[in-house]
Amino acid sequence: MAIHARQRAQQADTAAAAHEIRDVEQTTCCVVGGGPAGTLLRLLFARQGIKTTLLEGHADFDREFRGDTIHPAIMDILNEMGLADRLLETVPHTKVRSIIPSLRGPNPVAVDFTHLGGQFPYMPLMRQAEFLELLAAEASRYPAFTLVMGANARELVESEGIMRGVHYRAADGWHEVRALLTVGADGRFSRLRHLFAAPSANQDLVAD
Ligand SMILES: Cc1cc2nc3c(=O)[nH]c(=O)nc-3n(C[C@H](O)[C@H](O)[C@H](O)COP(=O)(O)OP(=O)(O)OC[C@H]3O[C@@H](n4cnc5c(N)ncnc54)[C@H](O)[C@@H]3O)c2cc1C
Image (cartoon, rainbow, N blue to C red):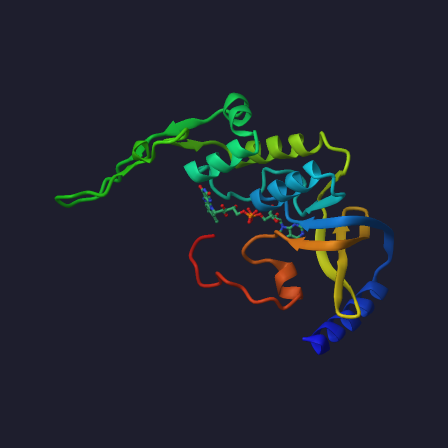
């Protein structure tokens, strides 16, 4: 593992030399990926006063389609975070209480969320972009937080086998973020996981 880390560090040094780094930002935590995982994580960090920089590759949250349903268990988590009511009040949505697929057979399978009980016995259907925008707006209330859109993390910054941050490419060139903790929340085909050669738990799953 240490050998791999050294090889990667040498590769990163070579790559960094190949393009000019315009500036270096020092932060406590760098989160790569502004999907639901990354935006929620950086909100939690921001609330704790932990200086966090979030890098999202796309220019806005209306990125490739990643589903429009928020499951009841996720609503419970959002409720614990004090966000559920605001989400339902501000983001247009449809409350799905049951799903009856048009399957043939004597006993067609039906999903009935009302059996769940609790505060959210339904599944809100809303545009994920608006859900992410609400989380981003909430995090922006905290000073310890920086969001960089259009920031495509391409390389790790490593030294002595320790991951120190990333190089990202933006419209104006290359930048470096140095952090005590770097989190890859860049989806199921995570570039960071690949760069760090970390094993994947869900490579064979058809869905996230
Ligand atoms: C077609 C489809 C439909 C789905 N429908 C649903 C649904 O209805 N409900 C549900 O709960 N789940 C659904 N899912 C699962 C869904 O993907 C996950 O719930 C959720 O999107 C996973 O969140 P995430 O933040 O881990 O990853 P993602 O949503 O994939 O977010 C990763 C983010 O990282 C960014 N990124 C990637 N690489 C880089 C990089 N190098 N630098 C910077 N940024 C980067 C991407 O642009 C993206 O914004 C669906 C998935 C798919 C593919």
